[in-house]
Image 1 (cartoon, rainbow, N blue to C red):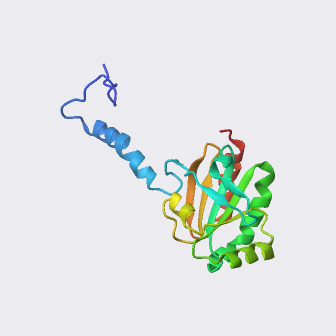
Image 2 (cartoon, rainbow, N blue to C red):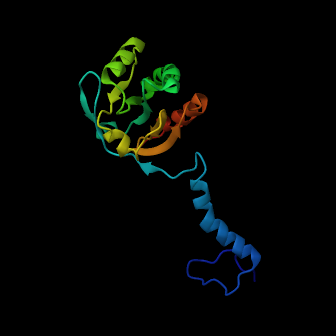
Image 3 (cartoon, helix red, strand yellow):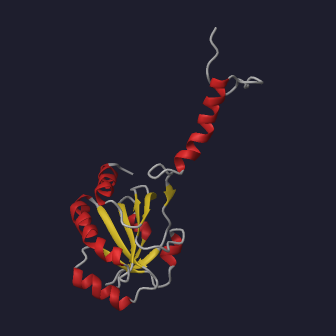
Amino acid sequence: MTTPLLPTPNQPLPAQPDLARRRALLAMTAAPALLAGLPGCARKAPAPAFDYTLLDGTRQASAALRGQVVLVNFWATSCAVCVKEMPQFVALHQRFAARGLQTLAVAMQHDAPALVAEFAQRRALPFGVVIDNTGAIARAFGGVRATPTTLLIDRSHFEVWRHEGEPNFAALQERIGPLLEARA
């Protein structure tokens, strides 16, 4: 009779498991922890609830975004990388908006509202622009401090991807497509 490599739930472990069993047990317990530290392998975290006001004065709540795929970009007009990458966010939004992608550009607390409004108007940003004048949105997302920071939220309202710095837009596009196909 062959002993199974891993014990069944009701079967106790032998006093001194052989090397194969030790490796299997280590893989079962360590793999999830190791994978959680790798980019793209992190566990989903619920996206926070937050209220926001768009530049046009419209008040909204993140709860209204549930069931949609949402791209959130924390940025600042004083951030050269943010300014440089904004046309790529515009292109990404235009590519996927008809399929349901919602995009929010959240200007950081230290950014002057007049500069944010002027930037958004001059660039004709086609998505929601929010000024996080109290820092509450950045705090809700775990204390975002670096710009740019980009997050992707799935239809079930889970944060499925986060990146500090300029993202690889081709890879980001590949992440968004399947999320738009999935149903909550």
